Length: 448
Ligand SMILES: Cc1cc2nc3c(=O)[nH]c(=O)nc-3n(C[C@H](O)[C@H](O)[C@H](O)COP(=O)(O)O)c2cc1C
Ligand code: SF4
Image (tube, rainbow, N blue to C red; front, top):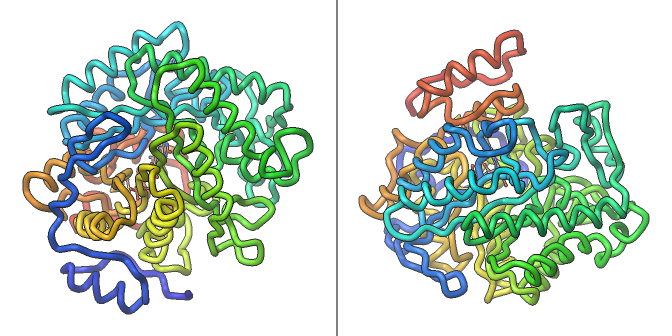
């Protein structure tokens, strides 16, 4: 569907519904958001509501990978915000896998620091909160410093232009070792008191890249069995060796042309083909994974797919609502294919306060089980309390999808919401932009 790019401009829920109709999209909307308050279960753990905070990296940990004061600040805000589940941001399983030298990195030397963070976060939440730690190797996006290279599974004509000079193609033996490093990190996360670990398989970081390694030779490339070997081996080994829930944040589709993208129609990469995604989720369920977090796209190559926006590095031809629908529909299709799997959806933040109405509409229609918020949590950490206690969200507190938190990341800064948490992040944003080409047009402090 070709539509002109439009910014968010809805003055009422009715106007949003009109646009959904005009674009011929099947996005459910509910005036009443009370279904989001329901409690729900993951295994035998009860969650106080269906609202989740997605992993949101602040690029602000200490040099040794342990949480800094800013990390504590972020999780205090999220915990007080009232969501039933907090998905703690990307945390590297080894030094070389860090996306930046300030990414969290769990190891034997700092596991107690993570334990403190877990206890602190639980102490700030009202009632129970389910805590997931996202374990990662950043792969081609690894920038750990100390002369360590980015790591690829194979060449990719669409993504290689983002690579630094220092690149290493990971060998089968190294992948085999890396599986064990994920398992070690899971054991450490268990010691730290997390409820679950996520074997991060999204946004084209290493594990996601392997799912699309059609052209790689050897036991981790080519066939479905080989491309999924790394993920399934890690899940099996963690299940065998650790006593912690295992989950996966999974790209349902990359929206990168085949054979370089996963989950895409071979003749039109803009159309998701979820056949293999469903097979993966079904196998994960058999392996004991009871919760999955569905996402898509790549924040470097096609950020409009990954995080629908009003202002970004380029102007997409599709309407942001079409991208919202694509993400939500992927979660819906996965839920339909593997009904016993608990599914968290991504893609709501662009909808501002109406994200609660769309989330409730989808939940009422059985599209998925939980709804996750990424940028919204940076901008509006207490969105869940407002939904649960006040029956909805306030536009004045919402994320405006301006892309500035992503820009800070690209500029190498520590990130957060430039608009709604401006005292802390506006100076960082401004400093990062100095000397750089101005690429976005939102006025900072703009109230929408
Ligand atoms: C600054 C920033 C940091 C992010 N960090 C992570 C991360 O650590 N792990 C992850 O899986 N996704 C990460 N994401 C993606 C979000 O979790 C989410 O998928 C994306 O923002 C789309 O959801 P939203 O529309 O609710 O924001 C990040 C996004 C942003 C903007
Ligand atoms: S800077 Fe704030 S308002 Fe802008 S996209 Fe990020 S979270 Fe949203």
